[in-house]
Length: 278
Ligand code: ATR
Image (tube, rainbow, N blue to C red; front, side):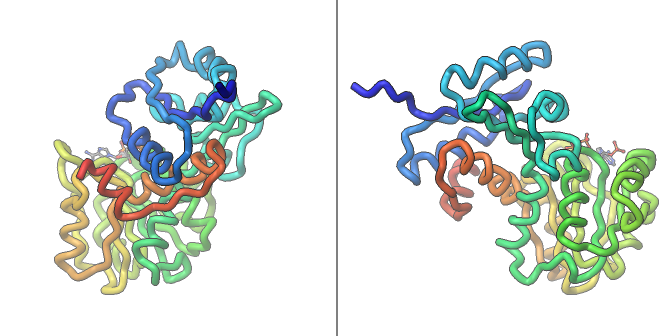
């Protein structure tokens, strides 16, 4: 009998039952024939540091972290990638063999890879971007779009102070737009992104119209419940290219899986169906 334990990974959150990450990583483990496990781990804020520190000894190679641990996770890591430092939060932790913890944030990467896969003509340098929202997801997306070379990024948020904070951090390429002028700011915007929770099941719709959007703009939404949000449907009605938010979730999982299990997984239609429960 082998005394080599299979590699383990998981996702830590509070709550955690809703997370799609176990299905996502479980699918890849099966597809790639890897003898490993990825499990949901419920930990409160009080339990997080102690719980996390115990995992490497149990055979865990690393974890994803979700609410409310994304900011604390960055603080307790020994090394932090540049993109996680810029975003100010981590979603992927890797336990190194020397006992150290490295932190990454793959949300912006997932956002960009989703656009690349589903809108192959998309390029950050195609023109201005319009980002709706200024929460945690917006930080990752603003950071990623600027890294990709967007030269003008328009940012509209209901609470202007949060948009101001992002603009202060990310510099002169970020232009603040009044929330109630967001529809006008569609003019000339080649990448249009909803990072707010509006349009999610049980939430009101986004109060914006796409009339001024260029006909070759790409419209994307981080909300994926429903898959086709009212915002994406409105874009489709105008024959604009749309990319739904599920792909961002699928792609953000790739770097962690690769770190922990040593194989590069693919984002395929089969994976999408599995995560959608189809
Ligand atoms: P996340 O980390 O998922 O981005 P968040 O930090 O709570 O979550 O941010 C949610 C985003 O949705 C914010 O931009 C928020 O706007 P405020 O900063 O004004 O709160 C936006 N949002 C949520 N509900 C909204 C609503 N009813 N109208 C407008 N924007 C809303």
